[in-house]
Length: 454
Image (cartoon, one colour):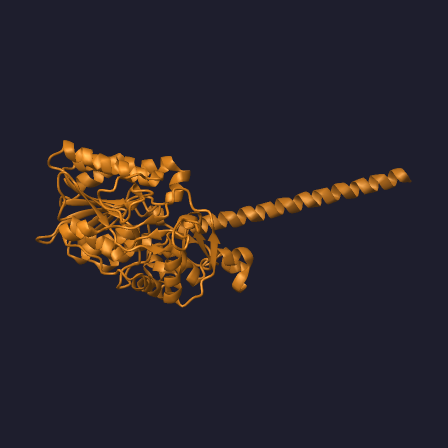
């Protein structure tokens, strides 16, 4: 009797195990099917990497008295504003960007604002020497000048990944200079950074301040500057200018380009954290299927500029704003920085392109005014009208420094440049107006949807 019971129990256990195994197999197959469908859907609709050229068959035209200008990093924050401004001034522009951190929407938006015979785009990496050289050699009409913005630009990330920064900034600048030499292009505007100065006791910063970078980002930019100067010394026909800009923010006052945020084309069309914790009645279907929408790339959020993070928090794309570093030896414990509006920074580059020289001149680009992070956040709250939740982190980021602001008297005196947007609230108002009217980024224009449906 006991033997029969044991056999019966064993049979039941085997059956339950088989049913459990079958259920696990079915769930695994279902999960695999869902993931496969997700990947297929993404690859079918999201074609960012497939865009290799824009207007490839269009012959560029250069108007009398104007130039054909290469803008590297022209899909990025500063580069896209520079490309648009140059086109506004009547120049012809070719953008080179690998879209690793740039914005496809910016390229398509610029293209929609100007005739195709004045604008081209190449999806290319400056690390690909062969491809870069072929683009410059094939450029027609001949390129008159290169503005070099392309670079990754986060101090904290550079401390964690120094080799990435030396390759991306220093080595890629060498690649670009070699490609320019092979193509007989001899005019160069370099977008450098105040990070080359590092932690300084004497403020404000002048061009005579001795660089002492505290991060691989600052060091790699300084190395690139030295390469440019050495190349100029060995190449009499080569003319360049180096601009060390301070903390950039804002966006096009006419609202044509996005304030800086790292764009990721993702599912769903709701903030990631809504899906993760089920807020705002977000349904599973919305999270699974969603709509085509842009968001700052999640892995880069912790490095993002305070201006972008403030607006992310104000719009609800971030649940709170994290202020990193509250124990600095400053008036309120937070970093003090010189915030330069992107429109003013671009104007400095345009002014500088008429002053390239050998040896290359060097200029600081800033307002000459220092503002603490807490003061910046207060301004952001005032402009947005949102009581942004602020989370403070006492420990500062690796490579950070307490204070930094410019003495811009040299560029004012020698080139006649001066900033127009010295009031941070005005610059933030430009960015906030864009965010409110375009909560889905460039998709609001319809240009991204038009592209993915082609």
